[in-house]
Length: 446
Image 1 (tube, one colour):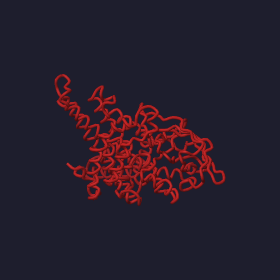
Image 2 (cartoon, helix red, strand yellow):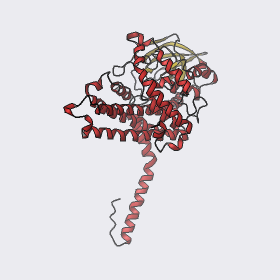
Image 3 (cartoon, rainbow, N blue to C red):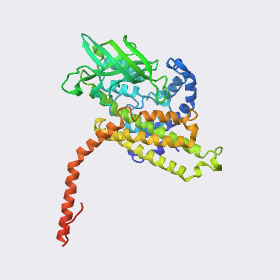
Image 4 (cartoon, rainbow, N blue to C red):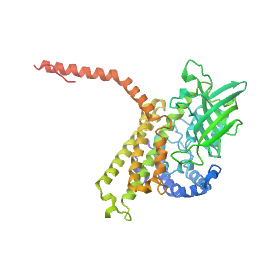
C-alpha cells in the first residue's frame, strides 16, 4: 500500500499529485534509510564528552540522499514563503508524520527543530542582509541554530516575565542575562542564536518591551555552562543548553524587524512550530503502535502459553490506539488547513487544540506499548522509553498545556456565550409558547 493511499479523506482535496508522490518517497526514505541508520548514528556519536564534538558521518550521507530525492526543506509552506520545496502546511503535515518515526529523519531532510522555526523567522521577518548571512546557510544545511527564549528562575510560561536585558549603546546592543533549554546549542555546527530579551522594560505596553536579536554563537562574553538532560537523555549532539551572556556586544543591524517587535515575531514562530511538533508526534505514536502490534504477536514470547494478542484487553489497547491516533491526526490536519487558508494567527484555536491533544494521545499509546514489553519497554532495547521522554517534553515546550487550555477556554467562552445564551432562551420561550398554544401548562426545562 502506498503512503498516498492512506491519506485521510478530509485531506485528499488539498493534496497535490506531486505531494502524493513525495509522500511515498518520504515513507520509503524513513523506513529503509533513516530507521536502519539510527544505531550507526549513535555508534558514530560515541560516548562521554566526545558526543558534543562529533558530527556522525552517516548523517551527511543521509542528507545527500535526501537532497537527491528532493526531500529537502519540506516545511516552508508555498503560500507564505518563496523558499522551500513548495508544499502546503497540510501536505508537509502528512510528510512530517513519517519523519516523526525516526530520530534522524528530520535533520536528514533539513526539517529539524529548532532550525525550522528559526528559518521561518528569518524568511518572514529578516532583512536581506540577515537572510544572506544566516538563512541561506541554514537552508543549505551547512550550519545549525538555537532558539533562546526560556530563562531559569522565572515563570517562562508567561513570556512577559523575561528578564534578559538588551541595551543599546551606540551602534551596538549589549546583552546580559541567562537562558536555558536552548535547544540546538550543543551541536558543534550551531553558529546562530536567535535570542529574545527586553529592550524597553518600562514600555507602557508589556507586549512592546521585548525584541529578538541574532547573535553569532562565538561572540565573546557567551558561556555555555552545561547541557540539560531530558529524563536522563542528553540529546547529543543537539542538546539543550544553559547559557549566560555577560556584556555581549552585537551590532544594531542584528535586531530583527525592530525594537519592541519580539512578541509579534515569537507568535509568528511558535504557531507553525507547535503544529510541526504535533505532526511529528503523530508519527511517534504510529511507531509505538507498530511496536505494540509486533510484541503482542511475538511467537517467542508467550506468557502463560498464550500470545498477548489472544487477550481481550490487549486487542482493546490496539483498537483504542488506532481510534486515538486517527482522531488526533484529523485535529492536526484541520489546524494545517486553517493555517493554509489564512495564517497561524487565524488558527490559534486549532493550533492550541492540536498542541494539547496530540502529546497526551501519543503518551497514552506509547505507555501501552511499554506495558506490553514489560522491562524491555523501559530500557534501551526498544525505542519506546526515548519516544516517551521526547513526547513528554512537548506538554511543556512552546507553552504548557494549562496555558493553552486556559486561553482556549477563555476564547471559546467569550466568542460563544452571548449566542448560546440567546439561542437557548429563544428555544425555551418558543417551547413554552407551543405548550400554551396547545392547552398545556408552560413548563419547558430548556
